[in-house]
Picture 1: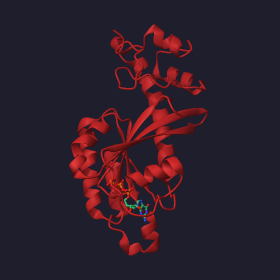
Picture 2: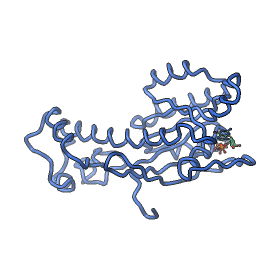
Picture 3: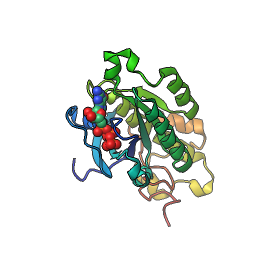
Picture 4: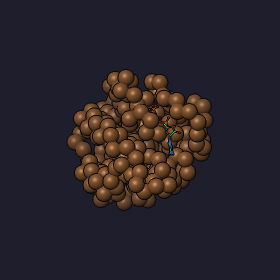
Length: 244
Ligand SMILES: Nc1nc2c(ncn2[C@@H]2O[C@H](COP(=O)(O)OP(=O)(O)OP(=O)(O)O)[C@@H](O)[C@H]2O)c(=O)[nH]1
């Protein structure tokens, strides 16, 4: 695992104590640490290798500190993120207001970042439904409005945690493929360079300039190229926008 390249940066945001570190612990190590709550200082990083079809995707997951004291620092960690898991505690309506704050930040500052809303500690609702502090339908409406996916998870039982990160990895793969398609239909300054075509095994078809043609090509190509987002943070520098 060490030294492995990270494909997609994922950041976890949300009020302190909502369970971000526990979510990462469950996702990365399949366990839940009960015991005294220790707040995150600064941020923590973990790399998680996911499988999507016949591809592997390494997610670099940044667990930020929820304390408002570290708010400025959290902004550094969402820069260049391809996905943000914005967490709130299902039993705490205040934490959902804080989640909205982070969504606004992302919408204003990280346009290319996909947002996943994550209501945490669902096991507490299993124990007692009256503990729910955030209405599911209200959040679903909000998620539709901001075009986010919504998950209700429990790091204690593991409910929906793997599903959440799997969706992040799948969207990364599918969204990258979409960006490859649009790159081909962009104007001249966004064309992929010769070196990029070679980097993709020379499988680019000069004749397939239409989106439909590229869709056919992509669906018949087993290994989709990953980094073809001209000018984006994760481009390896092979496209014309990044090349000097
Ligand atoms: N019952 C239950 N408790 C949870 C769950 N996830 C987290 N907790 C508890 O909630 C508390 C806070 O969890 P953390 O994961 O440290 O929260 P955090 O969001 O990382 O907190 P900061 O680092 O301060 O931002 C801890 O006492 C956890 O044991 C869960 O799914 N179910």
